[in-house]
Image (spheres, helix red, strand yellow):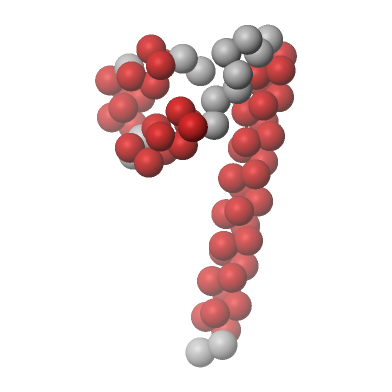
Length: 66
């Protein structure tokens, strides 16, 4: 992912500033090949989805304790 992509008005208008910063902070190293970069983003996505699932589970547990 390049800064050109992350600065594109269509992207900037479609996501929050926090998401843009997350993408910038979690980019693969500049010399990463295409296959490795794809694998990198698959890994980042998997981590984000895992965190989301854990947060949803915690919310369900807290709601059940009411």
